[in-house]
Every structure is written in structure tokens, then in C-alpha cells.
Image (cartoon, rainbow, N blue to C red; front, side):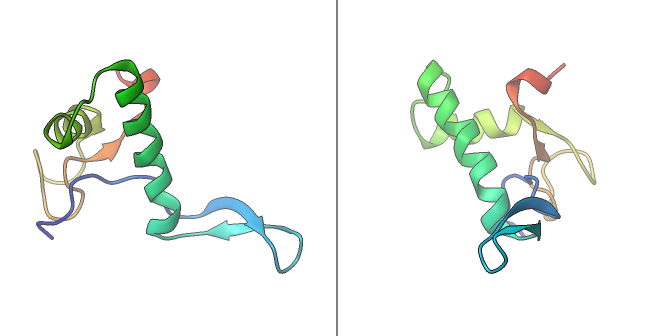
Amino acid sequence: GDYIDIAAPGVDGWAAYAATGGAALWSGTSFAAPFVSVALARAVQTGDVADITTARDFLAVSARDLGPRGRDRMFGYGLLQAPECLP
């Protein structure tokens, strides 16, 4: 929908599973949100993001476009890329 700004890894992530004391594959926004949070925190730390407007701009330029060209209702600006992964 129009509320999607960015896509982040959130399907089949390997994480701890307290019930067994082991690990399991997990999916969902709860696993995708930390990727975005860390990327924005790093950008604030380096001075690349100062407010909500620059945060949205940072996400837009830090994404690999997916789906239809440009921002779309399925992936927003695209899949978030770590700065080290940008060309």
C-alpha cells in the first residue's frame, strides 16, 4: 500500500527459539524492522540523517529498486541495502 516506504529482509531469518533453546527460521515485520533501525541509526551517527525528511531520503537512495520502476505499493522505494553494499 501507500504506507510502505522500504522493504527489508524479514523472511526465513535464522534466530533464537527460546522454547527449544535452539534456533529456528522466522518471518515477519518484527524481523525486518531492526534492519531499518540499524541503517538509520548508523546514518544519524555519521550525520547523513538529521530528521524525518532526511531519513526518508536516505532510505530512498539506500534501496535497490524492486517491482515497477520507482516507489511502488509492494516494495516502497525497494530493498534496503547496507551502505557497504551500494555500488
